[in-house]
Amino acid sequence: MTTQPNPRRTSTYPILETAREQVLAKGEGLSESQLLEILELPDAAIPEALQLAHEVRLEHCGEDVEVEGIISIKTGGCPEDCHFCSQSGLFDSPVRGVWLDIPELVKAAKETAATGATEFCIVAAVRGPDIKLMNQIKFAIDRINAEVDINIACSLGMLTQRQVDQLAEWGVHRYNHNLETARSYFPEVVTTHTYEERLETCNMVKAAGMELCCGALIGMGETTAQRAELASQLAALEPHEVPLNFLNPRPGTPLENQGIMDGKDALRAIAAFRLAMPRTVLRYAGGRELTLGDLGTREGLMGGINAVIVGNYLTTLGRPADADLNLLVELNMPIKELQKSL
Image (cartoon, rainbow, N blue to C red; front, top):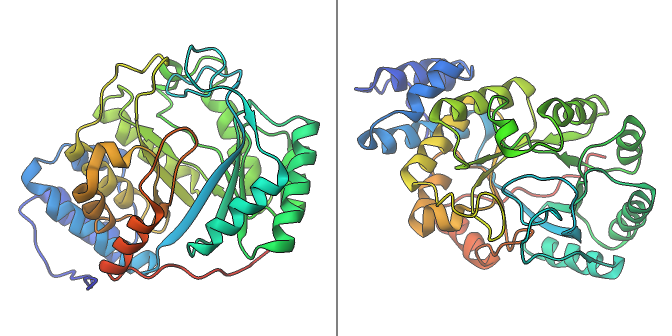
């Protein structure tokens, strides 16, 4: 059963007591310095931090959990040098360029909808879309809308204003463009574009009326303080959704030897991101299978997460969709029903 908020509870950890009053009772996210305190809590405090984050999620987001599937229309061959990504054409990784045709996208959308998902995200490994890709996206959107009752999201890299306007006109429900890491650490992860360029696309998407999905990839060697910085910067951007990824080091990339993030640090991060953004959709995304395992996945779902990507990711395997869906049923977490708003 889900746990109802209990504002009278007291904590032996002052930052959790502060968070209970500030975030749970008032709906005000924690500041960067406060988030750092959450991220530095001792192991013994993690269950209490996750419980509080769960109560915040119930109070400010409700019980529903949003399910999404993703598929890549273009995989590999990207000209950018994101050090975590095996799709970069600049690294000696095993991923090679592949394009999907429209019937395959429609089939994938149907399969995604059959899981109960409300979102289907079309992804392309590009710096930004050219005219050919935009035309393909338009055709895919029209075909999917004609055959599948599902919201369509896109992740196509950095956009021009005209491209943003086109996607909004075509009915794209949500656009994904991750900040990935803190502004202060960004040059250590990407050198072929800047943090500011990514931020510009995010702001244009919001101004056009599309929902903004803007996430994080943690465990890339950033400091704990930089994780707090990233959570604070995302909160300031006010995205509708934040996918929370954990580094899965990929062969051939500059971060292939980084190692897997400690599961307890990942759980601290889940709690911190929820306490930074009490009303945001916080989605389990890539790397959780390695970083958290089955037990940690369960703890995170009861610690502030209210959305999941089911099935496989772009270049890595995820948990079977049935495993996640069955877990949601077991935890009495209802799946959000589709509501077309565009």
